[in-house]
Length: 273
Image 1 (tube, rainbow, N blue to C red):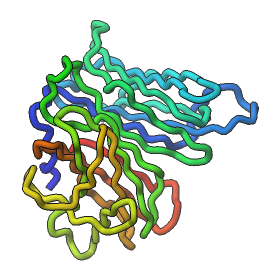
Image 2 (image 1 turned 120 degrees about the vertical axis):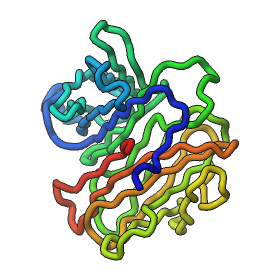
Image 3 (image 1 turned 180 degrees about the vertical axis):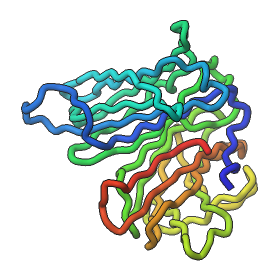
Image 4 (image 1 turned 90 degrees about the vertical axis):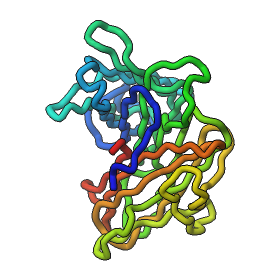
């Protein structure tokens, strides 16, 4: 079922999984009384670029006072995932720049421009950024995700998760819907997709433009959808689906750990599968 993920004719894509969580490392002056938050990053390349990437850097530039800038060089672990973290950084909104280089110092991929994340006091904000090769204006025919953000990093049974997506390419306007696994086992019930008024949404169909599913329309490039966790703990998996005005589609999978209490091991992330 995870082979549902299709990204059309994208020549090369990186998945940058940014989850604001943990309390590792340290940034900024300590004890100055300003609100702080934490960010933890992991970056994974598609197979075509796994052996090309030599280094990955993230730069956060504050849009709000005190307008701080943070830079982090990620390190590659034994599983081929690039990881790093920033702890106790100032609360606020940040512009995000993410760049990957090859061994010769050439830029291999970078994040789409004009992306932002929010760091909130006492909370964590998981974010997913997709890096891609540079393209000339108008070259990207199909829509694709450039960022996915969640309003919390801990999900308990019956709780609602707000999901914000940023897309590029294709033709506006866009619509967003969700899709659970087909015929999930009775012992592992799925969650429910909702609109902004908490009304249940019909799931997206299997084919682009088939007319099935309740797609929430959005103008511009930023859309939202809500997902209510089932009253059942364990890993849940679903798709986020975006269609453009021509009915072309992009999809990304999300794994969510649902529990009955806010425990440290509760986690989730968006990723290519």
